[in-house]
Length: 193
Image 1 (cartoon, one colour):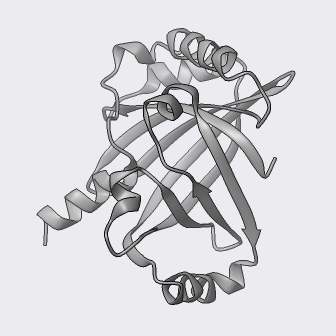
Image 2 (tube, rainbow, N blue to C red):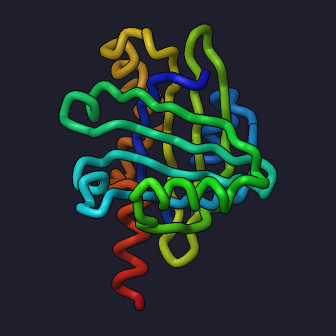
């Protein structure tokens, strides 16, 4: 699925989240990936990408996978119903060259960081359900619930599926992550210079 709809909801986790891990197992999710992701986010010189939650990102995973991701401008409608995501698989050997080309096109590197991620997955008919447990050094632990569907999937139906997913995993009792990692990490780095 290179062009798809991604609908997600993210929450802060404390240091002890054994109950969440038990719930993941009870719901039939399997560990699909244990990885170290190096994310680099780019923006335009006027920071419009940041203001409008546009995502232009390279993601290198475990030194053996590289993708370039683009997610268009966010607004109330796309936040509620998800938005298109385009992922282009690249050769990991081209990591530095990819960043070079993006910079030559006039974009600037906004923030870069490593994230330690465990991905638990389950597939139900047309939908892929993912649970990501993330750790970012100095920042903390997070859980992200995600549903992926073909770009033509009914968006309202997908939204209802995500709400059910959140309830089933008891994440509605956690503090919601209100900003993307890009902005959380950037603020942390700026405040700790």
